[in-house]
Length: 202
Ligand SMILES: [Fe+2]
Image (cartoon, rainbow, N blue to C red; front, side, top):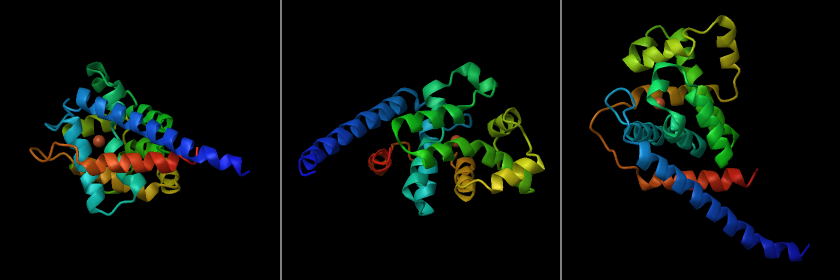
């Protein structure tokens, strides 16, 4: 029993090194593809930053802030030009990726739900469709369009329903042109903390 404690510092050191590696991989992805057009005169990086900052302003918890920054990571990792014309399920790619990195079930789930949250809001809020940009409206149709009554009920019963809607509203707001384009240090600090916390419960 006593000897086991010897391994704790080694375990923590290993976790810290793993976390650093994952953060470097994400930095590399943004350096490589963050300047690509998100589809509304905003780059992928600018959009991710704006969604994160909206989450910070709303005093969102750690998992939600991280999900806000990473919700479109599937585009950065796997999207190609052809993929923009069909639904390439970037939410599935992104969710799988963050789960593999170890950001935890909640972050992965929020990335998955940010697409149906748009379908929910358009289906249930009369004027929400007016908030969608042309690109978002196009993907809305590709992603299934209006929800059925059964889908609406299922959405309401989702464990992260309220957080999913919050993230979706930031997603549709975080498309302002000509604002901060440098990723704040607090993003990397949040990502590292989220990894350290969630990977410990693997
Ligand atoms: Fe987005």
